[in-house]
Amino acid sequence: MISYTELKKGMMILWNNEVYEVTDIAFVRMQQRKAVVQSKIKQLKTGKVIDKTWQASDAIEEPDFEKRDISFLYSNKGEYWFQIPGDPKSRFMVSMDIIGDAAKYLKPNTEVRAFMLDGFPIKIDLPVKMDFKVTEAPPAVKGNTAQGGDKVVMIETGAKVTAPLFINEGDIIRINTETGAYYERVEKSK
Image (cartoon, rainbow, N blue to C red; front, side, top):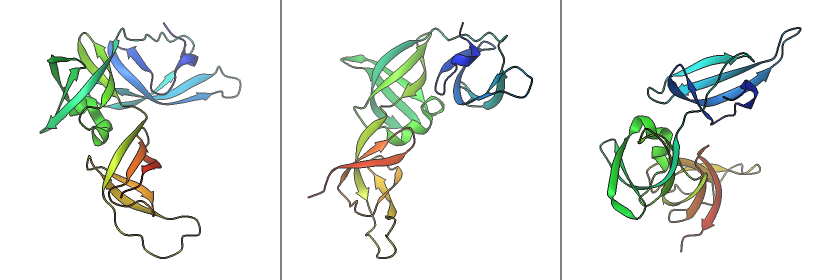
């Protein structure tokens, strides 16, 4: 059991016999009342997000899951295929419901962390920062760039990212996969 004050964004909990991920959290103290924790939790099976207020008397359990490193192989028609590294016979499919927004940043041979419950993945975590090749970048347009300038570029997975004007097609850029934000240019195209 964990205390309601120990809840953190990204943590997984077991509530009403279902696994949820905490997506937002705020500690609230109102006048002459006991402090509470307001949260948004996402049910991992259905993806439904609900508001939940936790009090000191609430019993919160952590699910008994196994963390395992797996390797992404390929996707086909909404199916995402993975394997345990070094074991080509251990291929398994993970649905789009579980992958979620991470699908935009999956490329072959990417090592990810899977949270397994009863032998099945319930959540996939990508590395926070990943490098991608820019496949499409419009030319920079002259204008007011006193505060910098941005443009939308496409990376090798087909995802669109807002990047600085100096990014060109063929550049390798680093992206924060949690926020989808450009981080830095790793390598300039030749």
